[in-house]
Length: 425
Image (cartoon, rainbow, N blue to C red; front, side):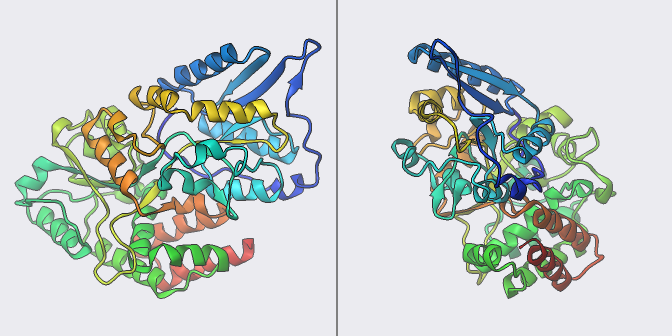
């Protein structure tokens, strides 16, 4: 399973599904009393595929009479299949989720099991960052498998070439770093402008740092994104874009193609990219990777802002249960949440830890730094294009892309997102 966060799950049919009986896809019981659990996940690549298979077989061995049938789909095929199943009110017993707006819609349609009580033996063991995306209306509806955050990956050698001694801690220092890199003839930032979602990271983080997490939570409830912090976030991003920090032709660049954002970083042709914990592996696949020259630093603070550098922005992967799933499905989620099982997952390189006190399980030095930032996080915000309903998340991506391109104002960005949110609400 790729660690990349990918897009949005179309769930327009969820509301219609709420009136359907939740029976077709639940536990199957044969004449011999065997319980069959249906598990659909996106672990198509190694090491996730093997780890998940081992979890299923080990659980079966410890629970005679239980059979786990696995369906594995890549991300886009999974989202398409889930849309069909949701419309029929026919979810697998266990299924992959990223939480946020899509999971909220499923919860509101009474399609998902509340784990707040039955999952209690495991829930306190997860970090704040890991469990937050799955808390809906005060209850927990999925367990996290991994957690990750977005931050700046940078080329230490290019920083040194530009005379930059240490990563910036504040937004003003960050702008100084950008200017120093430009003065040295180095492309400061690689950006996949064509794909839009990488650009929304900047606006979202700036909004967090300026207005704080409470502002984002309030906007998600009120469907109003006109608060000064959102507008100021747009102004600061506009200020950055005016410095022309991105590579030539960035608005037509993809993320993981041979000439895309990751490749520029991996080939040493750009000094920074704002990306999630999957960045080093995609850089290596796309551009060869820069080895020991690669470093990481959290998104800087904004002077005078309500947020702080200990608040993280990102997401991860989790598993939810259909409302009619059997007790054995709950037992399986508790089983894979045990520290022994989680260690197999993290040490294999499948993902960063979701359990507290598990940073030492991470082998890679840079990824261990990300894991420590997550473990220390005092607050967490899910990617905005997953935290909000799909149409709202899409509007965030579209509007921020237009802002970076210089086609709209910060006020117009806030207004467009608010209109979409109010329409959806």
